[in-house]
Image (cartoon, rainbow, N blue to C red; front, side, top):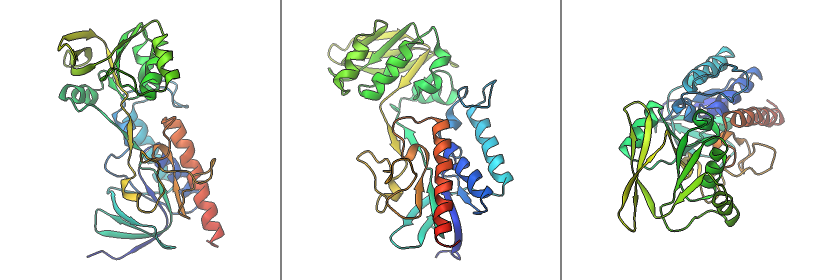
Length: 317
């Protein structure tokens, strides 16, 4: 049985930079936003040890600390930040119905989706260990590449994003080794040519990752296996970058909100946060397959709150 139905002007789903920025703007506009933080409060940034490319932090900041400060800023303007995750929605009518933790029902005039996307990892125990330690495993070269300046790194993947990551890292690192599982790339020809023509990128095809090696604190190398010959070799590296794609956290919205083939929410009007459902807006990585940065997510969070405010105003709120 549902609890008593709660009526809201603005519901924000997700708690990364996009969600918190939307909350700050919505709260300051007297929209009384309620935020549900989701399965990973703070989003992907909570797995990032150092953030040095977000404006306003001259000394850098840890991802978790940045999320704590964003939450405090949102709460300063009376955003109601709650634990819980959205398990079902019904956007078929004029009222946006949302269920939290399979029991609490909410009716919201506006909904801002800021559920983000989750990086795909190989699932190796050693990979997850050093990811959690923050000692050399990453899924974002733009975010973390600077920390490996002048060092040797490994990139896993065969698509355009893997080629982009490798090419970006090649400008910072002395050597980049790409591990491509099959005998050919999945990337576009132009991206493949770019990495093949970069002197300090070595490409190992038909190669899978066996284990991420380390000293218990940081990554020291990668054990890789040639799937044709069976040969196993150790590749010295201080960084292990996984570039096998992201999965947008949008499955719950699928029956109502238009998604692309991967699952990213489609903006109905470029330059806005509008989805195909009136009164439902999207911010951050749930719709962003290209940039995936904290600062761009924050910008779209602002846009979503402003779009939601205008929508409410048009309703006569």
